[in-house]
Amino acid sequence: MPSIGLQLYTLRDLLPGDYAGVIRKVAEMGYAGVETAGFPGTTPEAAAKLFKELGLEVPSAHSDLPLGDKKQAVLDTFGVLGCKRLVCPFFPPDQFTTRAGIAGICDKLNEAQAVAKANGLTLYYHNHWWEYREVVEGRPVNQWMLELLDPGVHLEIDTYWVKTGGVDPASVLRDLGNRASLLHIKDGPADETKAMLAVGSGVMDWAAVQSAAQADWWIVELDRCDTDMVTAVSQSYQFLASKGYARGTK
Image (tube, rainbow, N blue to C red; front, side, top):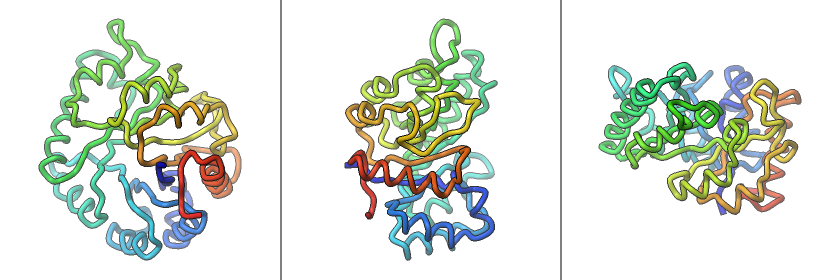
């Protein structure tokens, strides 16, 4: 059974004021791990020490690519965290509008994967809705990417954004198999213009996702929410654990 993690971007408004206090709440909820996205209000060293103290794993981290003048700082951060999976979280949607643009993105990801692999890391790419909705030269963007990416680049499939893009997440996961070993878990109306809901409160078919997935981590991420975010984070954990879709520490 996969483990339940939390993408800390979800709590980005709270972390700068009391990083340690917020992370302690996350651990108390039962989350088995956290996925970092920068270190607002702290440092990688202090965060790593706190995670270890609380027994929180760091299965993956959203990060700049290990290229150019950022290369060594990125690699150093992953060494501090003891984390082996580097996730590229985003390229702007306007860069995916032509085949040449898509190829340029994939070239950069392939270059970063070579650096990651040489340093004992695996590179992942995290999708949004546009890779599944937008069509370039008769093919969806995600299909171009699968053709152009090095097979060593793995995919952190954001199941909610796949559905928002008009594609069945379970079908995508079946096709990708163990290349999609990290999942992002969010819920809501599957409309990118509207706020999200606690996992289990929206339109997502989690039983279908579970049946198709080969991921070892289900990572909750709520970009924005109309309800209290800490409450939604707790409710999301409780839903996943109580349904047996994934497990935490409680």
